[in-house]
Amino acid sequence: MAVVQVAAAAIHYQIEGPAAAPALLLLHALGADLSMWEPQMEAWRSRYRVIRFEVRGHGGSSPAGVSELTMGVLAGDALAVLDAVQIPRAHWCGISMGGMTAMWAAARQPERVSRLILCNTSAHLPPASLWRSRLDTVRREGMAALVPAIIERWFTPQFIAQAPEQVEHVRAMLLKVDPASYAAACAAIRDMDQRPDLSRIRAPTLVVCGDADPATPLPHSQALCAAIPGAELHLLHASHLSSVEAPQEFAAAIGAFLGVAS
Image (cartoon, rainbow, N blue to C red; front, side, top):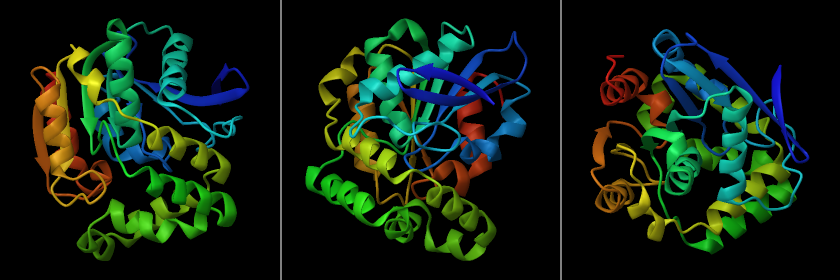
């Protein structure tokens, strides 16, 4: 298992695809792991040098090591993974918290970001009280207390009924997350307001939104497009975890944006 050590944390990552291909860094959602990208990997691993990694306390990465994380720490972990595989510059594609991490890097480390893909995400996600409640609940009761509501936010009722095996995979993935690390990542979202930084982003940007996403609904994506110079919007028929609910359409939109049909 490939890991890079960042302070007290061991960050698990995988790298696949031709060494000479354009580099594509994938950043998963809060509560997920690198398996959430499997629906796209068959198409992408042959066309890109794909780097996937897992946030502290998720998948094969060690626990957070701190009680609260910040977007700066999460982006620093992503940059450390790129450094470990000796890739100075990549396309960054993040969903939900992964998108928040990617926009932080694009605004502050523009030389590391070729193209930016922000999926089902937001620059600011109040109220802070919601995140305080969520991190308090997971610290007290564990991930099982949150999972039913997460599943309802991540998928439409139709997908839950029609794809029970995929939904169960995601449910099991969520239950494996270290509760203290999940709480630490919640703190990063609670304290985040990247709205003043968006105009600094110079990478060509695609914003992907699910038309049935209750977590980061369309106005959040429209606000990103209004603030990031030249950003494009692509709407999918999906809820919050659009890469799983609409996998082919998701891959095709990103492939077209990157200049290679998926």
